[in-house]
Length: 171
Image (cartoon, rainbow, N blue to C red; front, side, top):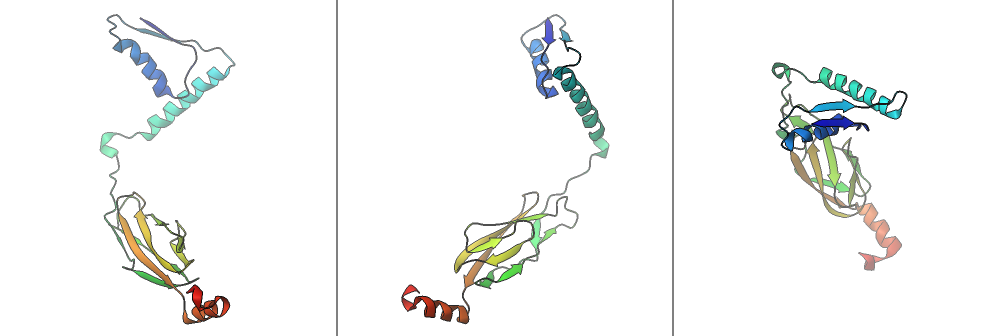
């Protein structure tokens, strides 16, 4: 019926769980909890940090009636259905998350093959090699995804340079 904490955890939830375990093992008497903390030790600083964290979390947590409502993204607009680029071209795509009052209006960009590279934060697409790939745009909350097929080809001038430098057999 006694719990003694002499080595405090950084995480108060883990320490509280250890205390609660004394109740769950079939204890019928009251449980006494003691914390032995030596002055001027790291354990004393851990306890102070725990108290600061608790005060911070108490200040952050709101009453049930004042909890803000989070609105998930439902669509991504302003993007082309397909994208055709020439080798070494650069284009910046701008996506708009709907609805307008969505909680997280950020987007992330991905591509799976080095045919075209994309800056994940700005949406700047650069054609790196000839071929086809898929560009993926994801809403910041992860609820909406849109894929854009990307085709990269050479211009006539680029084709001529390739043929003159490397010969027709390469292509």
